[in-house]
Image (cartoon, rainbow, N blue to C red):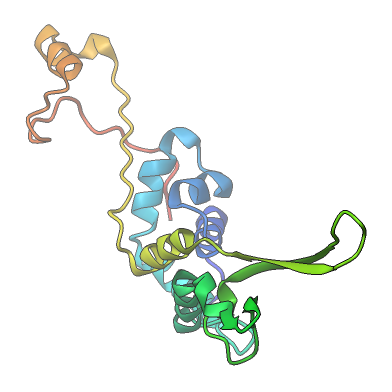
Length: 195
């Protein structure tokens, strides 16, 4: 499938594919921010857009790009990382042991060494610090990849107060819309969305 003829839709599909939130992808594609949330929802459900999105995914999947499973394995390794994985006890105390057989080495963010001496400038001691990536951030990314979070919902309401009755205004002010069952105003149509 070639690029979409509608350049805004093509930009939206590419922005979305590159990881932008859908509303931001619509804004960056040239849709007005006023309509972006509703347009993004509609565009992301259009067959043409979904097909283009899948095509972009397939083009990106080659040997140089980590597959979804590989990315999940890396994030899982980060989430499971523990400083105790790299510590060993010996007769002279504890020390770090990090090698190719050490578990969860992708969890390591940084290793720094420094030498400290006593007040006389003798008796050198090597101080090694190991910093791990955040396991909670790794878990958060895994949850996002799996769709474990409820989708973000946006609602934009453009109502002219003069078009409503006093009763409708009072209902809106109270926040009581009857669980979404009452329709208070007509849906505004976007002039921007077209094939």
